[in-house]
Length: 381
Figure 1: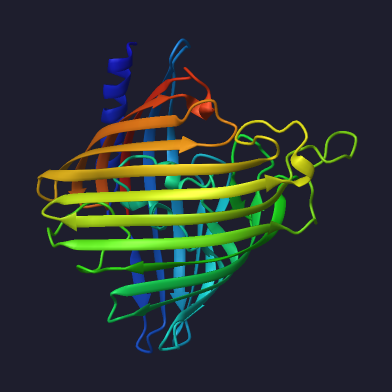
Figure 2 (figure 1 turned 120 degrees about the vertical axis):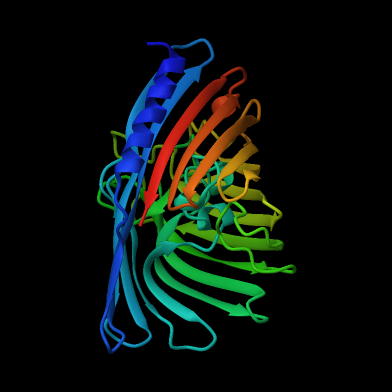
């Protein structure tokens, strides 16, 4: 079967799946205000990879299969837990309880998104491109969900938002990445390095509030500027070792990260721009280090611009993006350019997406070029 036919078959399969899904999601609430809410998202994805000079491969998978339960039985308190049975093994996502009784802020305890990276804080169900770019990818410095204490609030009549967190966070001992994950995980390996993380984020909206959602459905103008920073330090409790019980050169000692981002909405146009920079250092110089590191340390830089325009208001959107990543251990910058089309049946609740991504110098290796096709159907309730 040719690649073209494979792609159209995948589109048809995705379309049939989403069309057959029945609307669901329900909130039960009693007269005292106590409630329980059930919901979730289903993303069926076709992914084709075509490396330059190699054989192509493809797969059809549930990219995300993610139910959640949220509820409250006490005033100003709520709890939520969410898990994913998609792409990988069973994974914990949201798992927290929140107190909203303070006027100045909300307090969450548990596993939630760390306040860093506008693209990360934009849920996967609200993305314009099928997959996140480097600036929102936990594999390359962005913290993702972490277990700890999280404070958040608003100011200036909602024209400013802030968040501060302290958490325990884990890093995969893989020198090709800077991969953060939560310490609360079913399938996390025993060799993951743990440490303390603190950080915060501030975002302002000079022309009107811009939600963490891509795509402009109402046409109202909005502009957002955000900054964020964090620091992670190894707690020495779980150092990665080789077969002889010695440090294996993959123990990250400390990481600092900085984010600068902006978002524009209006007239059917939606554009997000973001730059991240991470300084990371391996313990004892990281003997034998490779990947993103040089002489046991690296400055990892990520930049992305992505956007779309509604050629048919609230229905059909042309999208595109460009992202680049560089690190001390790279011979060349890793670049990706994307083009795509989104068909919104019920805004982000039911949509079909196609993204074609052209990559060059993957993993910083000169000439290591890979093209990819993503076709995805989404149903959210």
